[in-house]
Length: 493
Image 1 (cartoon, rainbow, N blue to C red):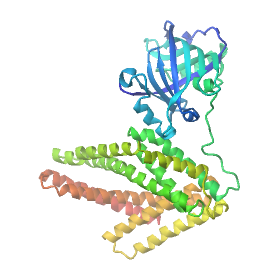
Image 2 (cartoon, helix red, strand yellow; image 1 turned 90 degrees about the vertical axis):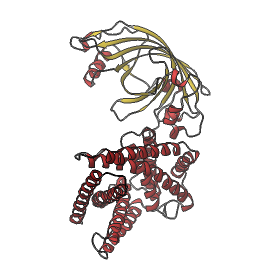
Image 3 (cartoon, rainbow, N blue to C red; image 1 turned 120 degrees about the horizontal axis):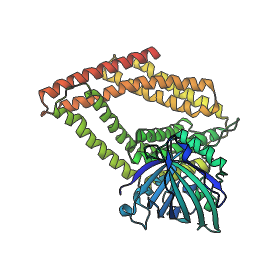
Image 4 (cartoon, helix red, strand yellow; image 1 turned 180 degrees about the vertical axis):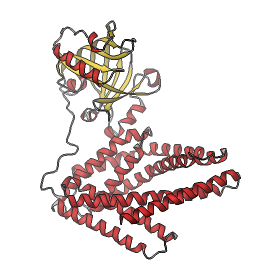
């Protein structure tokens, strides 16, 4: 069985052992409940010695018994109240070692640390399915008697009873009704977020991004921002490996924002500590950028061809060949994200956040340092705009200068956004203004890149006349789109 993903949405309650289960037939109009089925579940939970996974609300287990024996990885999800679960069966991964696919999903958390057994949990589970009028499963109600042993130093054995109510096809309304019924029957708020957390006494940490004090120092602001974007980088990593929607882009943005902070506040952290991390982030950005650029180009080509009667040879050139290049770029990216060099970068970034070497501006007021940084970035953008007047409109130099303006607008935006925690309206306005410039010139830059790509495709001597004709139409569309973007930029400024 190949790895499978699902979103787990459930309620969890503590109950007294032997508490009778309530009648659930009234939860669904015209619905019924299935016959209770009992299973014996035996699970071994894996983590690092310092429980890095548990502290990040992630559980990894090997479980036998029930209907889904195998390896299971559970982690936070963007779905409200849900957790993402990835399952790998024993026939796919074997039952002795943590599957490579699951380890990759948590690599940015565990780094090079070994995954070792930290707890064993045995659950005597009785499952009752809640069915709709047509017999389709909407939820499962589980009555669990749990025996858990912590394998950590000083660990002990715990026993308790709990109820779980998990959606299998129902909706939030069913979940709300079930919550009322179960509480009325004697269920209490769960004392822990998971069986593992209760077994090992671990609590998720919530201090990755701490609130800034009112009178923050420049170093405090930089640490705050670096931690926020480090967390984003780590969170998007496993999704990017699977080429999830927008994940490579968001991971690349996180890396860029960290570099921007280090560049915008040069006197806050000592350069001998910041520069190596910035350089490694630049190289990471190149790897991510190749995959992202191919993704963007593939999407752009598909959009350009959407309303065209394109011949097969042009579809091959713009779609099939580009998809192959994109897959190769993703493969290179995935390899880079498994290297020791990448893991060392994450370790060095952690050290930069948790134990930075202060620079000469570290103790200055954060607002003053942020104002200076935004002012410098804004001045560089304005200077680039002034130099634009030296070039003939639409000349190669003029186009390149617009690209420079776009990059400097992005620097203003990122620097202003880094100061958002300070709550200064002037900083926010500067960021919004720069974002508009970046967006309009970003569209123009995309058209420039696309037109160059189309010209390269047109240079293929084997292309049909029909393909060349369509390419000419596509180039005209992109030229018009670029001119509209420049017009919007001029109105903005």
